Length: 99
Image (tube, rainbow, N blue to C red; front, top):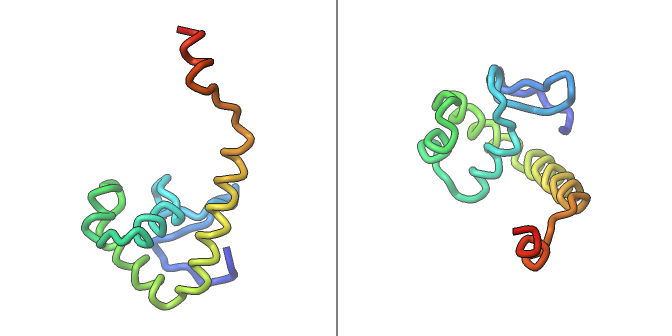
């Protein structure tokens, strides 16, 4: 995460993951929903444990730091893809053989 002063509703955990304070929902997930075009209400519906006010604060923060947050989101996506590439998943034929 770029060196930004995060809004009060966001925290960086000891393991380095940036999450909504008091929740396991990552900032990456909120950004992903936002960049997919979801509204504050739709994001809140997707993550109902996250207070609507926290989603609103994060959206305001996005407006103020768009470039940095898009970079952070892209880095999270690259890491997710890197990890997904390390996971061996059986293809359809292998699954049928196991059945």
